[in-house]
Image (cartoon, rainbow, N blue to C red; front, side, top):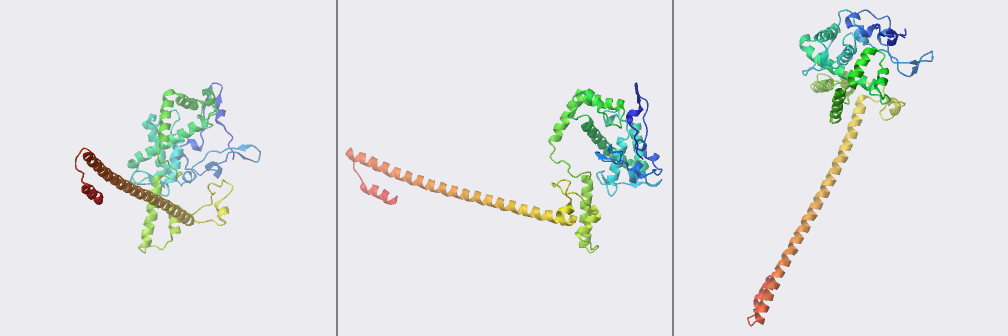
Length: 373
């Protein structure tokens, strides 16, 4: 069933007269009933795709199907590491669900300039919605970690919203930005955000933040998977390999990777565009282990070439240093001999002058000095 209702339909000439509330605008405890059909649970349509009537179909609301269809009383168990980061098999789903609640206007109202403006009542309501669908080992102890995660998701959502609807380079004036309203927002909500983002103090603060991010040395390239989950998976792989070495299991490396990371899925080959899949390129679908080993071999060869180039450069430097020292020794030896010869000829000159003035001339001394030189 297609939902053609648009937010604009709830406006009269004087302003908003109300707003429809769908599944996305309700707290999870209102979603325990089984949805009518899967379309209502996971309404996803890609932009640019044409439906049967020839009109463009747009991406609809995305719902957290696994959570909304949980039986009454059943909850999603969320694990945390020692740093308070969500880990385990449900970490990704929990983060997705929490992001939905942060973007849910009935839970977290839009008309705030920042997370710090939310009242304790609003945060208590958010926490109640989270506990309705998720369980924790120590709820009150985990609340701080969950709220910090929610704050990061709030900032990310605001950033994406601003980048898509406010920072569009085609929008030159504030009036144009006001017209570029997201469909899920009322005019009053969007005007509040546009006024906030147009404020000179905010723009100066945003500029400084952008400059700071430009100096970031370790950007996150791990997709939606957090560093905490990545560390956990690495630890699990090491643990399973240690158990294998102790004879506690006989799993191959590929089986261990699949147990921790899940089975390989078909995907597209990077740098070849969307028209060529991994299977099409390799003729057969390689396992994650094959790709990992191939990557290790390539890296090993690259490291070997780098090491050989480094050794060649070091040998060339040593040869140049040796040649320099030899040239320095020859120069010193020549200078020493020139200095000795100068001393001899200076002595001969003085003896010759003495002889001319009537003195004595001792050729033996000169001969002796010549023989010694």
